[in-house]
Length: 114
Length: 112
Image (cartoon, rainbow over all chains, first blue to last red):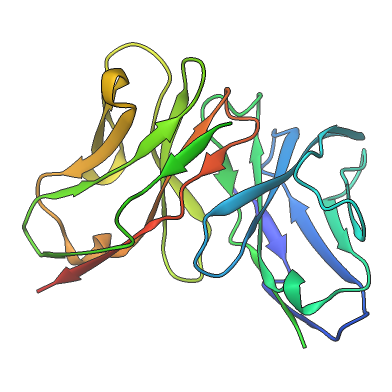
């Protein structure tokens, strides 16, 4: 009974490259959330998706960041033209309803931009 | 705007001692409140949650938290800390969980 699977666990990108972070929700979960954790800070909401729909992207930076959750396959968080300030841990969470009972988090992807 | 304050960045307690981690929130309506724990290099694990009913909630690993509306607080407690409890603890508030606002976290160190 796998939990929320995120890959890769660690990702190193040079400035200007693209980063693709993948998240497979728990079996039976159709709601996915992405959060970013900067060093020594709490998690900050980025985006909430259901299958094929973005429900709330109020926490997403206006440029370079995008997210999708296709009908088939994992949710993808895409960061184009990465900069050093994008270095952070990115966590995905999933829930079976609207998250009222708490999420299940993945182990995160730690992005380092060099 | 919603916000969560965890006043203590670091707390050190002796193994076997009691623990209380503080959490204060600002939220306009009845909040949904959560405590999560994060071990180094890991994701977050839900310890407990509150959204209605009894203001004292029990969670996993022997933790409990008490919702005090008059104080806008949701402090986490454990009567006897174990070395394996050393981790970072996050309090979060939300309008039903879709978009949680997290505090900055409290790092718990346990000394033997």
